[in-house]
Length: 517
Image 1 (cartoon, rainbow, N blue to C red):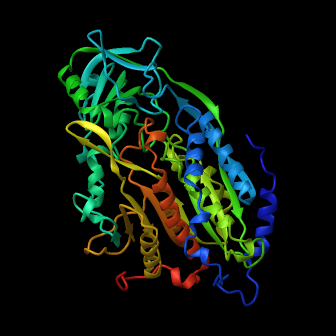
Image 2 (image 1 turned 45 degrees about the vertical axis):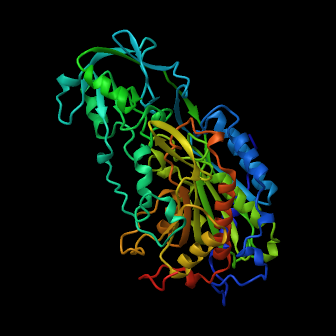
Image 3 (image 1 turned 30 degrees about the vertical axis):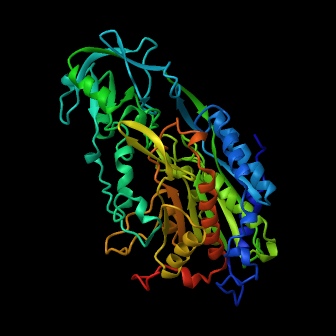
């Protein structure tokens, strides 16, 4: 690992003087005359080989980059080295110690199994953070869980918890400002609906059954999902539950139906897991603009998380690296605003960000955002669409649908749509939550860390892919589309450049739709 930087105190002490703006301070960034700020120069983007090599290095330690794991530390070492080489300064780490739980990863099921009548049952994955069994496993009668069952009906039993897409409160009704390649969607009025049949989100985990099963003393649980084995295998539970003791395994819909038929029989469930102290960290750094460390400095925050199970759940950090490297090709004197980099580590920690809210650096140092006038979230890049035809799960020749979200400013909406069109970004919708879309419907919520713009009250943009195949640890390097990754980062670099040059008043939240783009 790289050594801890000691200049955090220097940065914070210097911030106080910068917060009080000098007389005559203007909220406009000014222009540098460098066309590459708002019109992408593709020579400044990383090459396809560089993007592939970054992902290959990220994927080189044998599995998910879950916070504090050897694979995660390898990933952060790569990111920090590359960022510093690109001119990022004043880097520092905010450690967040926690207890890490882990077991073997699909297809290695040597630490988790299910047997009924002496026969090994096909298991798709394990329930994350769900405790452990003795080495020999636990044995109990299979029982189909129903809400309101008594403790006597569950004690010592292996509960079958059946999940349904109907349990989801997220109806695919999102409208939008713009949709590219509408002819490639089954229903372009509801483009997000195409992912529903192959995505376990947001119905993973035991959900409301978890606490009743624990309280009743159930021996273990089987989570039956409405997905095929190929679609479900290797899935890592999200939202990530806190550490608990209810050993759980995932079953696909066909295997689950067999277990429901077997209710009343004795089953043996085995889940061997380890816990250990780990110390991941939030990472911060700055690509200086022309006014860096002066009272006139303004910043665009680039934020993502660094932990996740697949090739692209957490590759937003490589996306941010791409944006930073792009703007590092423009001289500092011509960069109107500073880029602030924030890599968070809490997304896949037990209980996710909310469980470690007090340890977030901004919780004790809210002044860190004092210079931020805009924020960008970048996640889930270079994703390939998956499909099931004739019962066969496979990657198609198309990109996974992605989204670009933008705060409610017509100027920003126009900027986002122009960036998508200029860079020929495929199968993407531009959404502006909080106002009606082009069909008169709601444009849905903000997803992911891009929502920080709303939380801190600044202009914002974010992007992410839809994730149907990428909740699984088996989606590795062969599930990455490098040209799509580069096109996404060209688009976000263009939006970022606009945020670096725009007058602040022109990108503030406004009401109404404004003129059509």
